[in-house]
Amino acid sequence: MPVEKIALITGANKGIGFAIARQLGEQGIVVLVGARDEVLGKQAADALAGDGITAVPLRLDVTDPASVAEAAREIERRYGRLDILVNNAGVAGGFSGASSEATAADLREVYETNVFGVVTVTHALLPLLRLSPAGRVVNLSSHVGSLTLNSNPGSPLAGLDMIAYQSSKTALNAVTVAYAKELRGTPIKVNAALPGVVATDINHHRGHRTPAEGAVIAVRLALLDEAGPSGACLADDEPFRGSAERHQQRRGMAVLQITISDLQTILHQCAGEAEDALPLEQAPDRPFDELGYDSLALLETHSRIERDFGVELSEDEVGLMNTARELVDFVNSLLQLKVMSAV
Ligand SMILES: NC(=O)c1ccc[n+]([C@@H]2O[C@H](COP(=O)([O-])OP(=O)(O)OC[C@H]3O[C@@H](n4cnc5c(N)ncnc54)[C@H](OP(=O)(O)O)[C@@H]3O)[C@@H](O)[C@H]2O)c1
Image (cartoon, rainbow, N blue to C red; front, top):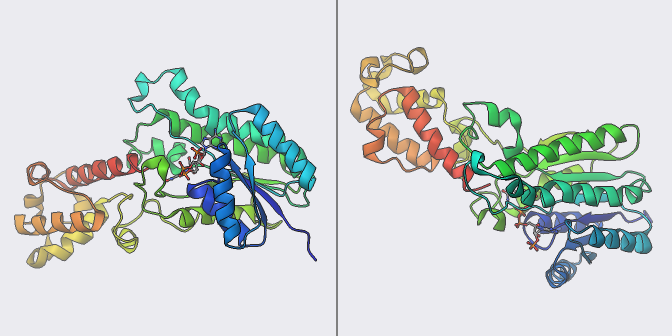
């Protein structure tokens, strides 16, 4: 009989962590349900056990080194090794002001869990992961930590200002790469998972994905075979930003960006007899009427954008958007607000 794999998931009493525990458990893996609250951890493990999963609650507060050390001793005593560590526990933090108003304490509050907590847990458990034939570490990161997305003015994150949470995930990505670099040449792989925008307590259930959907990429990285990557930061096939067409395929939810070319497609569909109007890409800063688009086509276009992108365009505001660039920037600023409230 093959030896059972042992997985620890931190913050597994609810949300994405609970879904990861379930999906790993369904693969026959023994799941250690990490939770800082003993009662909640037991309830979660009992729920999984009720569905036939081998789930064991493990008290673990990632910000408390003594609790982490105790959990590591417990795993060593019971199993003698660890095969999979999912650093899932995370917080958004209480600070919601502008970046320039944040203090070091505001950042530290979030880093304690999202960065230092991951380091504390990984440091304590690496000796046990080294005893596994194929140790896997998965860190739950976020698109909002991407420096590439954040520094691109056209990205849906360009207007997102959550310095503590965002930079904690950027730091987590760097920590992930640092571990992967050092462990190159060992059987251990360390990767970061991007779950997408998932409806959980952390964002007051404003995400559009389910925890089960958000768990998929973390589970895939936890089960990587020898040929898999290490030091990567990966999402599943959920497009984070893309065309209006792809956007519409995602249950009409809006976390994406509208481009001038998306607007062109919609305008063409709505413009009727004005099909020969000048392409928007050639003159994004010229008023629509000069390009040959009439107000009726524009009204229809606004309704289509509202429906397809899930935003509300007030007539007063949208009436001021006379050019393609103005309209696209305006819609994207509304989409950014949606992302901001759904991280
Ligand atoms: N939801 C999203 O859209 C999204 C997107 C990208 C990344 N993520 C990341 O995914 C991970 C899971 O988040 P979620 O959406 O599932 O949020 P969630 O439902 O709020 O779950 C967070 C979990 O972390 C636990 N936790 C917090 N501080 C802890 C600590 N000091 N020690 C141990 N556990 C602690 C919580 O325990 P309590 O119940 O005791 O508070 C809870 O179990 C986080 O790292 C988050 O940043 C989420």
